[in-house]
Length: 470
Image (tube, rainbow, N blue to C red):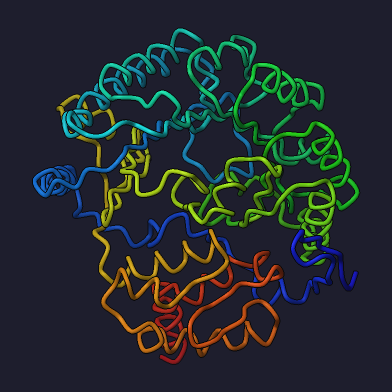
């Protein structure tokens, strides 16, 4: 394969050379989080977290709230998984976890009694739908008693279609959830067997249909390409079935094989993984097919129907990007609940304990289970704003950055602008004296473009280069 068609509503048809993706697109970072967790400081604990929030309150920095709730439990281990999860077959572990989660809700709420409304609520995992209706209602009631939920906010839950025997989409809707994210991965049985996730086509398609009938504002499906024993033909079959089901959003996730970092992936035979050419063909096929079906490429391989709120927000210049991905709610304080949850408060990032027993021990002593964090420098904030503007809007005005930060953009980022010349020659960006504009081809490789502004990535590379010469 030498090229593929990628349809863009504003530019028509053009060619995408897979060599560009090889050169500029290889990245396992999507910049929802900057800096990455590896650069968090273990000295940043519950005391530092509390002090920072009190300073915000004293400074009258009032922002809307976003709440992330991590449910780590799964019935079985998916070998491709990169998330913090615990395999369980019983309900006792879940009940114990929920009782501690209730304690954490109360501890966190003490800092936000006079705060604006909670605009976003997100239940992730793990498998949040392992919880039964009573358990989910109990957590939601605890949240409602301690936080002021906005009536028309965005309340999302991740759904495993295999774990819905004790729940229904209608029940989730009646609880207050208005967005669902349904994991699909791939319909082929051999692919499913290779990743230890048996999930029938009928169960998945029924879940999508039931969510649509229940009246959810947003139904998103997630497909994974680059999985073991996956082929273009197999992936195309899954893609066509999902396009026919017509969800509001389709997210394409690239499987990154990092067994040294994620233990479940050690169960995958690296020899079963498709080669780079096949992975690229899957991606280009999906882009072509989805755009032809009328989906708009938001960015970061997320596609949405034309009337979707993210499409509208992007057109109006108010789309934002953060820990939850694309959102229409900018500048929220993100409160993280549950084991391993990551929070964000302006210039501070924090993570809860990833060890379940340590998470329990701290809460039993009425201490927030903060494991590590970081207070972003002025440079971090500038670079994060640059990346988010490129990811959300595909254009960055130097003046817009200079309005918020006391820098001369071209002087401050002289090295990065020089590095971007190669990207310009490849047709991924256009540069002039006033702005950086990402081309439609560049939108496909936006993560690679953002790498140019990643100071920590450059520092790591410099360290490796120095070590190589010792």
